Length: 502
Image 1: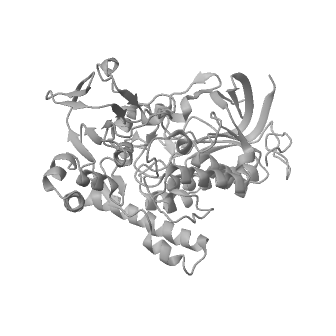
Image 2: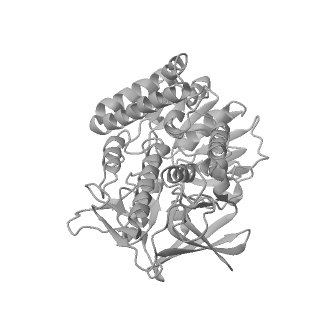
Image 3: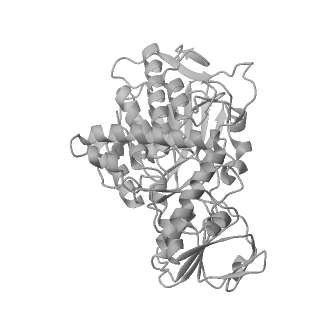
């Protein structure tokens, strides 16, 4: 088996992978870049999910790439349109030429002697290997193959059809059927109104209510600006405006929870038309943004409830029965179709086994440097977006930081860089710190984050961006200067191999 030598190996061809590849080529055109994608198509999440109504759960101006303006009419975008935009971006920038599909990375071992990562993968089931100077994991944070399973008893007794949003059956026809959707997160809030349009009735069965905010599906200010400004200018202004607005909403919820709870309640009552329904089914026992706040474009979920096409039941599942679901209070929700929108299962770095000189590394023992580099792991980065803002806002900050880091590796002739945790770092917590179920279940598996930069990751776009963009690349990092490996000549690959994909 012949090793493929590459300067930068990016794992994953979703939004993050495309963004990172673009930024690295923008700042370091002499580097060779390859993207290993386990699936046979790019797009990541937006190619995987095919459930009814699948859409962005934040506005497209902040979710889109900063370097390629969104020119569509809607600001809350359907999944198919978003996937087409991502594919067109990869094509127009040439990033699509860097992708090696059906290539699933399984293990990566750092060789201190060679200052290289040796990566084992499989392509179409056959073993392949890479030798890479730097590895960036753009695999997201959830398991594509196995969603969270609460283990409902009696599932095998159900006489109807069971579907999970992560693996939506292409032949499932819900027209005229009774549907129960288990869950109250962003997926359930999307699926319920989408299925209610054709189903006999849709019931959203939730254990705990979620805050839901109605938001226009089009951006009136962006449309107005579009009459006189270029698409690029409109995109920049709308992105800045919406990022600020989302940041302000989050800060208001965290600092003035009682006031924001009252405002959200008032908006929901206006949309649903019933204070009783809102107090029972849309008033969580926690403060706004302690867990993710869900968006209903144009209030579609509320409209479905108000029209009677959908309803919400708050209760606990006892077990599945042939005719549907029996609750703890013995009520039976009859159903022809049950959709289990029960959440994600965290899987960091795509489940790749990471070793250093043959010794296994536990990610929970690492600390994250600016939310991307990991202590104890030289020349390795992870690209994780925000959980309280559009994913791409943070992913692009990380991508630009990594491009700047690689530029320094090139300019100084260094072999490697790794974060060094200070002795006085103080208390740490999971670097994705929010009490949502899927994150709380995996808190013990995550890298750690501290309370001060560059070791903090505060989910605060202003502080994070300011700190990351202005970071001194000497502080907190150990740079190993080249010894046995010569610094590359201009136009030569850092790996010493001919420049493919540059």
